[in-house]
Length: 235
Image (cartoon, rainbow, N blue to C red):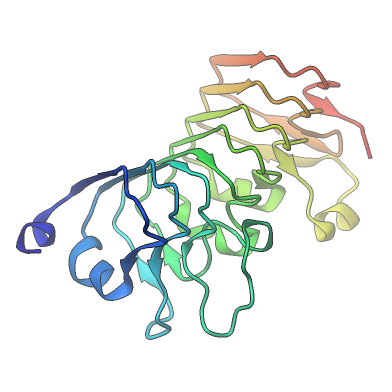
């Protein structure tokens, strides 16, 4: 534990028979200073840490977070006492409890969540430069239109082998009703966009939007058989 207080990089692999990886007290004492956290191959892990309701939020100093091979992961933070959510289909990976103001790189691979963020809980990731999502078979929602304003630093976006994704930028109901005049979506620093093995992808976003990538250098789209166009007009 003395070593953990000074650790900036932590790699956790092959965790067996553990559903909650860390207690909140441990996060506060030993893990808030971490800059790089990599967790993989935890067949039974449902939560990274347990919420004991003592504080409203926990702010991590992480710059790189990688979660891989966690097939039963429900959320980063366990549900609080008043929650009845019990499955990945009913919750998000990150919620208002966890804040990542310094996060630059996020890698998610082979986890079972349907949604990563809710739009109103996304603002703490505004320094994100790289987002990689692969092999998340249940994932339906990547980003919403209102999240884009918090992705002004994003330089790389890679999404692959996620069979439930229909579009990368989804419309919120408020935006859908209020904006019918080509709402602008801009990624000013994005230079690499890769979409691969997305069996049900119909487009990057709906034609209600104007999309701009002023610095894009690499665009790779492979094995997306349902693609109707980069910008689609499906209802």
